[in-house]
Image (cartoon, rainbow, N blue to C red; front, top):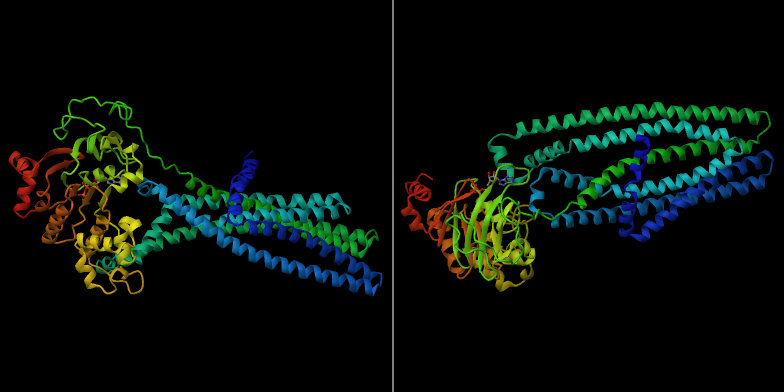
Length: 618
Ligand SMILES: Nc1ncnc2c1ncn2[C@@H]1O[C@H](COP(=O)(O)OP(=O)(O)OP(=O)(O)O)[C@@H](O)[C@H]1O
């Protein structure tokens, strides 16, 4: 039955949510439970005192009436104090919970793979989890306790009403059901609407970001694209508004119509009670009590039912959070069987025919020192195109290698695989004879220092921008200075005031903004913080430097990288030719490889590109 499964759905994540809340603050959760029970019982006392007052008045018992008025006053005061404390605890618990859950979300983000961040569906999930989950858990708790409170109140009023007529209890219950069913339905629609348009919401946030962000301000102004983007923003938000309005109107209309049923039921019972009292079968006090019991019982019951609707909605949102937290972070580790026969770690590798000339005649042995790509192929998740294919390559330890190729040839992908940001779809990569998948990720990354073309510009202190290259040495000043010098950033440091403690970037007060080339030098310095790393990779991090500066950087880089393996990606031949060995990648495959002179002599693609650049065409 769909109704029943919805009802079950309303509570599916409640135990896990309550566990989250319990872990956040036990004391607050217990206090919330106790105060909720008090809030459930006190109104019964107030109603009973009301009856006693009326009865005392009718019996002309002044002191009795005064006594009960004082009792009622005390109960009402207690109720108000209880309510205030409840609100306070809810606020505190809500703040604590929001904090804890955001930390959980970010902690999870740290364990995710790069592929997750490059996947739009994952992004939607993350956005949804962050948007809703910090306040929904508290709503689940408040709603659960609220339901308990109303249930106790309802049972109390129900017991009172039964003595008037069991029919009254039945009418009270039945009249509230249609409105509840409608509420659950609308909650469901609201959730689906928001989930369904989640990609559109991201577009909206992105437009906001472009229109109000320092990175884009120059282009937005100079290309005059502000109005165009703003009108896209308007169109999208207008569309959202229309959908939301339709839903709100439907929800409001149905809610109002169906609540009339409850009002009708109340007045029907009121008439019955009034007639019974007029016939002398009820005292005035009993009439007052029953009317109050019916009205408040009805309210309690409606609250329970609408809380059910709310719970259903909260649970749908909580499912987002739990799904996000359950994302598997283990990468696909099995190479495709067709590509390479499975082989146990350490087992003697057999020779394979058809290896490109890039491969030395021997294959990975546990004792070899260097990086070996064995028939490596890679497709980005969800893509049928091979970004890399049939890559067979051995880079002996200490060698300097340059990767050359057109845009989109697969050079960065090569680095992403080497640094295990992704794993090969087929084939395998070995470091010192051991499959990368067998390496502890921490140990592997400690050995590699990388600067990507889209390196980060942290809006942090200068010390942090450099020192974060080796967090453990963030406060090791001599090391930070050494790294700055090696990255060629000494003149950057001398031009800004504040030295290592200077704030960089424009986001925060007194931040010094650097030029593109200066940021690159800082990024290089960050890589040089990894003094223990024996593999250094520069993926075009010098594109913003002028040719002369780039040449200087690479000369220094080479000198400093003595004995280390270096891999450099560059489109500039003066840089490329310095490498011991050059690999030309085209369409994801290794096309040529050799020294600069050997490749020129071969007169192939490399020689062609070199001639173009020498003639000033690239
Ligand atoms: N995250 C990704 N998802 C899907 N495809 C990608 C992704 N990153 C790169 N690609 C595709 O993989 C191919 C190789 O890209 P890669 O970044 O390795 O090229 P590149 O040689 O480094 O280019 P450039 O010189 O422009 O930096 C390209 O066709 C690109 O479109």
